Length: 520
Ligand SMILES: Nc1ncnc2c1ncn2[C@@H]1O[C@H](COP(=O)(O)OP(=O)(O)OP(=O)(O)O)[C@@H](O)[C@H]1O
Image (tube, rainbow, N blue to C red):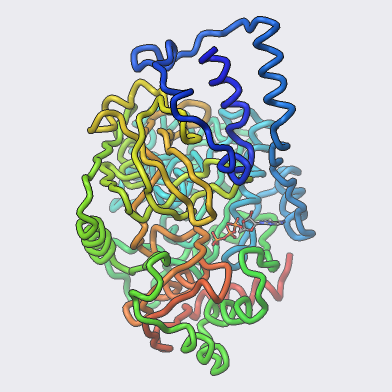
């Protein structure tokens, strides 16, 4: 009977929470020790229901509200053009301002490409660990097998040739996806093309082909965060990937998506477009002035900081001020070392400290059509035993690694999201894929503390409410990345701003000017 209830509950699991939470489940009805839910037996055996049990189960399905379906995305003409070009085998650079759907399109494209070529020939990479983990891919450096660089091309090539796995990746690749291209350095882009041509050029059919015939799918917005340079470059030195000698020859199509989806308010879209290009239009500055508040005004707003020290300080201060028992969750990693390093620099923390009342943010998409996505914020209202079915749960609550992850009696956090949904958060897994092979895995609770976040970590996210101090921003693109996370002006809170911090690199401006005038 208990299993039957459990199965009926699982049926309800993804139904809209409004309905779910209007159902007051009696806690006692679920106060049982599940035979298959025990820690030592994580695999649920198949159950043959009796006719009577099946009737109850079917009835529960029938009485349930319709499961919300993932709405099918209607791609714009520009997005369709990109999609078709990629499916025809063309190499494409897709750009566009924040929220124009680059990542959404990329995710769709990756699925299609894997269907066409098989998982082992499509390599998904990104310039940062956070972006790579979001796509279940690997960093571009890990893919390439070049190590941290700092040597000449010939030495880079011999490094790759001596790394059997990296060599195989270059040989096998039919498609190479690169996300967050704004953070790829020009020299590195050139070096990669050289490595691809040298290694694959041994095949007479591929000799002389740019990238050794690999189809490139590159996505990013050069007006966002630039590459993090290891050492200071000379004035006029090439920085951005589009400055690489091989850039133009690498693509059959370069396109900028123009329809913004993240924001719909015309004022906000116009303001953000101006800031992206480094313009400080007096009207826009006036709007920004009206969004200035004291930092304590809206505690539900995520504070964005340019530097990690500030993020850690603010999160720690808030956590301690609550005076509640702190639960510690330690990530469990497995796999090979260079890839495990990527997971450590990803978004899921090594150690997560949580307590009742803590502001948290999901750092993984759990259920996109219920809006439980990367960036959704909420507050911890409780901690519950993993087998207590009182709260609907997300993630894997019966994973055997739960022993190592939860320090205090396998209690899992229960989050009340700002959207009103209440959810017990189970374990999630982040993987690093090398083609079709999983080379490293991290298991952790998919939450981070969300009183504060770094601007670097929030690139790619959508936030409902944010608070930032523009005076502390540094470098081009930082103000734009911070402000373009919100969906509405109402969700934007500033504690001061300095128009001088609104900067765009002249080389980036020129690149986009050329792109829009050539439209090839
Ligand atoms: N054709 C479309 N129709 C409706 N919504 C869309 C469409 N394309 C993208 N979106 C939605 O727009 C939002 C922003 O998309 P996405 O995060 O992919 O933008 P992005 O260009 O990658 O932004 P950023 O540069 O900030 O990372 C997402 O919620 C996505 O689902």
